[in-house]
Image (tube, rainbow, N blue to C red; front, top):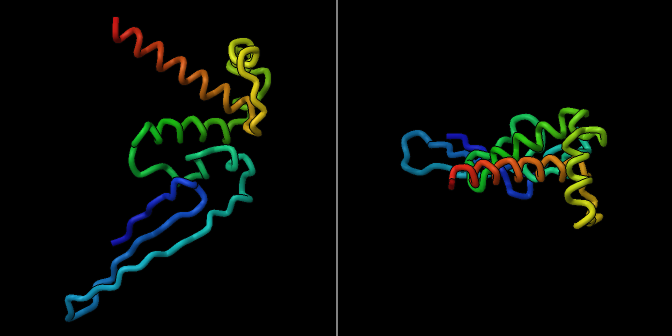
Length: 129
């Protein structure tokens, strides 16, 4: 049996395996650890869940898959990272005057997550009405 487990830190992947031995009831249980090659795309250092194709979270706890898809869109599409994107202009207008933290995270990624947050909050408010 082979099962992939993604470490929440994002850069180490574990593969757990069980090998049954013939004619016994004993089996070998082990773990293979592989370091993800972060040099493939430097933008992966800014994402929490998306570390390249095939790194989708196994479960959807805390909407990890949804955020993984947003991060995928941001890393793979240069237009998403443009300062001319309407979402970026919205972020500059609505958020930066109130909260301008230089934490090393690109504003275009923050703009995408802010846009999605306000989108889903509006949906929840409409459902409550």
